[in-house]
Image 1 (cartoon, rainbow, N blue to C red):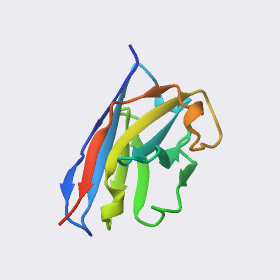
Image 2: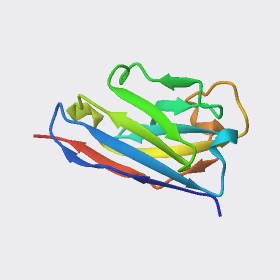
Image 3: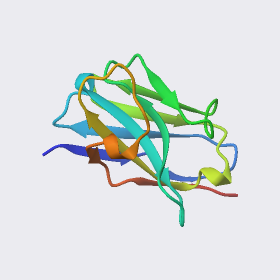
Length: 126
């Protein structure tokens, strides 16, 4: 069964860094776009960053641009989200999701994603 498993979350002080991982099983990243989304308490789930099936195109939301970087390792079938200069408002559950199919680009539209992980908690607090 296709599965996405997030890891790397935790408690970090403002200004700190974390690297989230999304390990995928039973799918090939070369034919799958991966997106990172987050949901804070009482708020809607929002898109953070995505990487296309080719790996050559990425998109990052303005709210985290310059601080978060998405990347992938096809040999490990894993996508990463490097988060630097973290702020309290980055506190949320972070989810990765897969959009099956070869696409030239990626978009952070939730309805396009076919499979979701269970999420990992990120808390930014002093």
